[in-house]
Amino acid sequence: MKIKQANIATRRAFSERMLEYGAIDKNFVVFEADIGYSTYSHLFGDAYPERYFNMGIAESNAMAAAAGMAAGGRTVIACSYGVFITMRAVEAIRTFICYPNLNVKFLSSHGGVTPAIDGVTHQATEDIGIMTTLPHMKVLAPADTESAKKMFDIAIKTPGPVFVRLMRDPLFDIYDKTEYFELGGSKLLQKGKDITIVTYGDMVFQSLEAAKELKKENIFTEIIDMYSIKPFDKNSLLESINKTQALLVVEDHQKRNGLGYELSNYCLKNKPVIFDNLGLDDTFAESGNYYKVIEKYGISKSHIINKAKELISMKGK
Amino acid sequence: MNKNTQELHQRIQFLKEKSKEVRIHIIDMIYQACSGHPGGALSAADIMTALYFDILNIDPNHPDWPDRDRFILSKGHACPVWYACLSLRGYFSKEELKTLRKCESILQGHPDMKKTPGVDMTTGSLGQGLSLGVGMALEGKLIKKKYHIFVILGDGEIDEGQIWEAAASASKYKLDNLIAIIDKNRLQMDGFTDNIMPMGSIRKKFEAFNWHTMEINGHDMKEILLHLEKAKKLKYKPTCIVANTVKGKGVSYMENIRKWHGKAPSQQEYEIAIKEIKNKKYEN
Image (cartoon, rainbow over all chains, first blue to last red; front, side, top):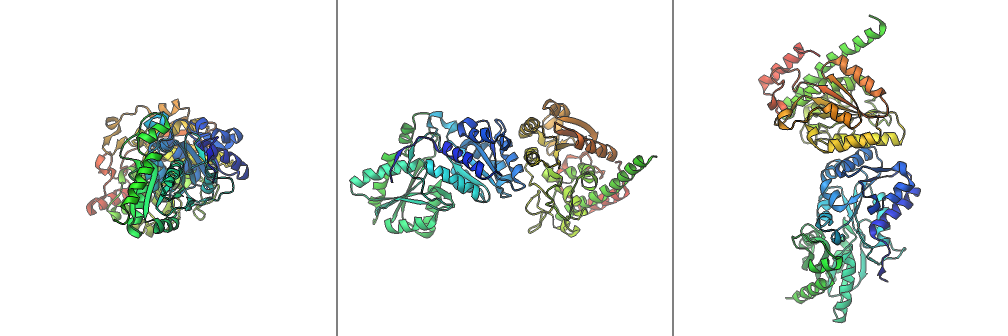
């Protein structure tokens, strides 16, 4: 695994794949809510204007209209920011897309605090909790360019609604073009015996950085990129925690109702181990430099290092 | 009377008789379920009868026929009127009507496209049906089909801002395959619309969004028929028909009374209602 600075954000990678796929599959259409130059859905709109519907700054109408179009079986990709998709338009999504299980896929940009600079209004830090709660909804969160492209393919091939959480800025590339991703899958990025870190999205990089530091102190971390959040890869999780007996979930999301809550619930029922989770601790973040924001709000590399050590010290007590 | 006038007269007489059957089923269904919304179902009964027994291009033997006209009941709580029409048209047996709102029933408390044959779209959350219709109309345009999408809305649910988002988008895409009918019975759950949230002229609002508009008596079968036929021929813009109606129409003690928005009749009330409808104490 070779980590390098990304050239493009995952929102753009997803939209570039959507454009490519538009030539392969002539049937799907795209709905946008006036941020097409930010979600990069305009790439598709420029190439296929007759298959691109810009519904203006009116997300609830856009999502309900997407449902109306999907009611006859058509696949719709609906694009906006996470805060607007998962909160402004959530009822239209719940009642008219999830309830009848229609083929609407969500390009949801600005996940977590990745739009740190924009402030709280644009930071989707509750999106995973809201979307995973909806029956029929599947939830994916790619960490980099290649995985974002593959998530487009998974979303369009998976029947029913699929939510894909994307990020505002180019961060880091981890995967090469040959990597395979699937619904319900995960990636074991690093093997280790002392603790399992399960993470997704931008926190994958922070976790890998933390693991490097921990290794210097002879602490060996197992890292799983749980890019498929719903459904999640139970087998890989169990295999890992059976070995390490300690689990730390790291996510750019509220601690409450995130993947950490989901996995702690699962572990309590199936395999109780030493556990904790990092995320926003029942608080909103603030506007600022992304790296300063994740440091201040407890989800950066340094916090992961400290928490991992703390959990390992509790083992066997 | 020339041949055309005679033919129209016969259609109207047929629909008037049919609307009685529809109303009887509405009352019967809600009485059996001990729950439901009679007021708004009765106000829409004549329009729904005209749609399902004359206007809509549908085939009950093939509910999924790709070329069919689509219908969306945005005011989903009025679904007993829809279920009555669907059953009388043969989408499912009349026995099913007795199962309204019960476990395992194909007739949910609010319409469910996955459970009920003939229901093209799930509804029940107010203010959303016009958006759903916009999506269906865009689909019709995309695949160049000639079918129409009819949406019945309540005059209470237009309080919702999303209605006006939908109105703008239908206008933007020149959806002349979309026909919205406002069942303007002047009552919403908590009282008269003019007191709860005065919306002014609905017709002028849709006109301002660049829709074709019409205003009719929603219980006059001739007016209903002629305007629906006209609406199907209008081009380049969506059409809004404001239908002036009476909530609870056809049952004297329910007419214009707020509490009959969502209440089942007692046995005595049930018997009076059925008798009144059978004896047709109202004009349409």
